[in-house]
Image 1 (cartoon, rainbow, N blue to C red):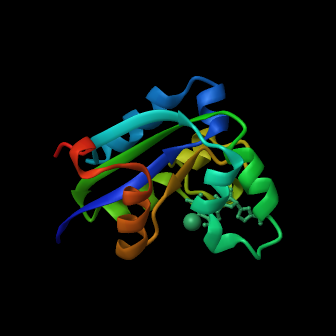
Image 2 (image 1 turned 120 degrees about the vertical axis):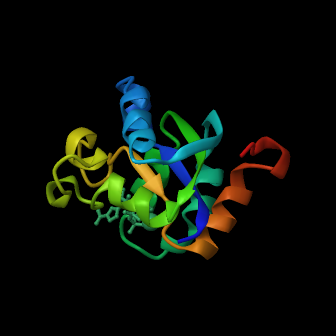
Image 3 (image 1 turned 135 degrees about the horizontal axis):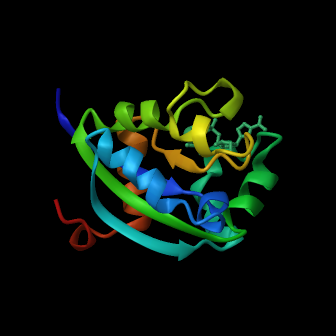
Length: 140
Ligand code: RTP
Ligand code: MG
């Protein structure tokens, strides 16, 4: 197993409910280490660029408005198998299908307001980390 880095976003529904600490606790308990973190507000343009891979999907406009609707906490997480591990701790996209104990099972409100984002593969992780952080902002 290799040490990996992945991009995590704590979404606006979670910052609005003041539960970033509860989510971070789940990530750290799973063995993921926060090596970069900032709280920001995405413009619709930035959110649209971030989720450009979904631009032809029916949920794209709602997703972009939601991601720009309030503050988010963006993080780089590091650990063994960090990409898959983070996806496991997050749980399924739809909280109704998320395994018990996962972040989305415990905290997500809906498939849209589902509390967290996580990169889905090594190539996207690399791109998404570079989208938000310069090398000197990441301290391993
Ligand atoms: P994310 O990218 O946010 O980590 O979520 P994901 O990989 O689990 O899901 P993805 O397929 O990449 O979709 C991105 C986000 O779009 C919203 N979505 N809505 N209404 C729908 O059918 C639908 N499908 C996806 C979700 O908020 C999802 O997190
Ligand atoms: Mg995704």
